[in-house]
Figure (tube, rainbow, N blue to C red):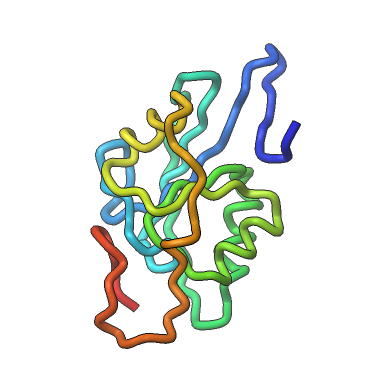
Amino acid sequence: MSDAIKKSKKGIRTDRIALPSMGNGGLDDQLSGHFGRCPVFTFMDVEGKTIKNVIKLNNPPHYKGEHMLVVNLLKHNGVNVVIEGGIEKEHLTGLEQVGIKVYAGVVGTLEFNVNTFINGKLKPGKADIVCDHSHEPEHEHGPGHQGH
């Protein structure tokens, strides 16, 4: 069994999923296109195929080179899955190092993406969505990008 899979006392799979959110967070919010620059993370506790709890947590201010600040915040809060739109290589590497499974390159509402994950239809992805920020500021991250 992977570190990213937890089981409840009843033997049902449980996950705490973090989703970078564009607005104030919550089920109807849109997924942010830029993991490190989202204003808030929405955590969803999932047991089996049911969303049990929704929690919002502000993304703390951080600066270039402080990628592990956000990674450690998520790990400290029990996150084992991240669903997001676009991510910097350093964040991606950090999440993988602490055992958080990443599903990247997706768009839409948080609820849609979590339900897609719950139903086994969301596939891990990362190759084409990693941002290295070595290009011009006007580069694109897709819908929901919050800028630099």
